[in-house]
Image (cartoon, rainbow, N blue to C red; front, side):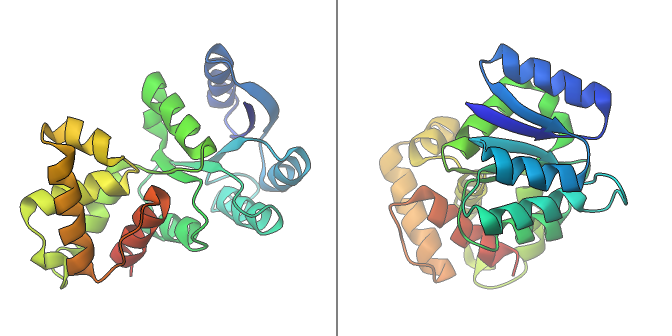
Length: 214
């Protein structure tokens, strides 16, 4: 699996290169600024990109802008974005095109190598991966709004795990209940949110997240 990596801090970039190569990934390019990232993404068309949000020259949102520009040229290009802080606006912009194959994680998740690599693989496969802390803040912000406020505690728990990109089977295992129970909770969630049910997990997650960030 070919990866384009974008991180301006040399030590962190080198560490992620070594980590990903240890798990069998091929590093197609490793860059340190936004313009080089756009060129690498469009030129290499990797299986997945791992990108820091804040990069030179202004250290604001160069990485995010590069990702959005590249996905306009290569729709659905899989990208896992890393951020130092929870920035809900960035998460919303990444989800806006509805194409999936997007991840948004806090940088400290990189140090949990198994979880980080799992997130890279899930995004490369077309999945949507959102940092649990981002989901927690979105849920907290939307908790006072109807119809989200109508969800039960268990439904909110299921919604949080859905938004992380977990399958029904994975949610059932995490909550130690049956998949049939998860299917019922999912149906109730979509009914209360006024969202159509879908067999496509990515579209389901994107719809839920789109509602939460509204």
